[in-house]
Length: 189
Length: 189
Image (cartoon, rainbow over all chains, first blue to last red):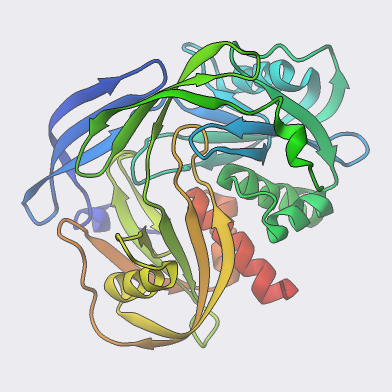
């Protein structure tokens, strides 16, 4: 399972020319000309993203905190773990603490870093850093961003796994994080 | 875990005005004005995507087929399950069969639909349909799209799970699909 970096040379693409083709309030869209391993030149279009953090909040009774949020691009309400984008100058730990408090009103005394997810490698450079948060205490009310509306609720790990099976949970970062939660909580990862 | 659709009204956003702000070879970027649950108007920027299929190919010896592919947006080689976009007019089963053959040279006699993933609900409407493929026979060589370069290899389920733990696998659709594979192959989902 170890790969020699040198063995990747036949796969690597290198930038020839880079341009920004759309810059909105949320999205930064790039169009780069790249040299393929074959030597030919092609184009790559992608979103330049500042990165995000997702939190698996584990209550003392073992239940996990989730959110229900309407996601306009898909047009559906999704069940997700709390998550949010990294603000400029912020460490990923700070983002995790800020987003957990803003979205759920909880603070956590124990933070464990689990790893990183890439949600959309085909057209975004987004990284999502995954934390498990324990020792949760309700500190106050939600302080949502302008235009953000979401419900907070909790369920057991086994209900969350069943919700993946049934299709009630389809958000890939949340499915990946439930998988991680199950490994940490049940298999001592 | 059942939610009343009517109870979603306080979360839903509705389109006021829609526009296309960038149309490339790959990306279709939209900017919509939307009415929030509060009544205020805001904007939503997102990728309009045709949908994709990911395949979990299980060899007769129990190993799973993976790919190593350079992903330009992130600038790294990723370990992923075979996957690809749905062509116009194609059923998801047809996409699965076509992509498995094109990317790996294998055909499968047994296809089981497991469900759908949403990789990027914040800024893309992409759906990824998940199939488990068994009864694999090598039919020929890779027939890759122009500009596509990838390596094919296989590993055991336990090595794949360990690769998630170690951080060697970070692609969220692949982590989600490994989770599903483990449930199907070990827990009889």
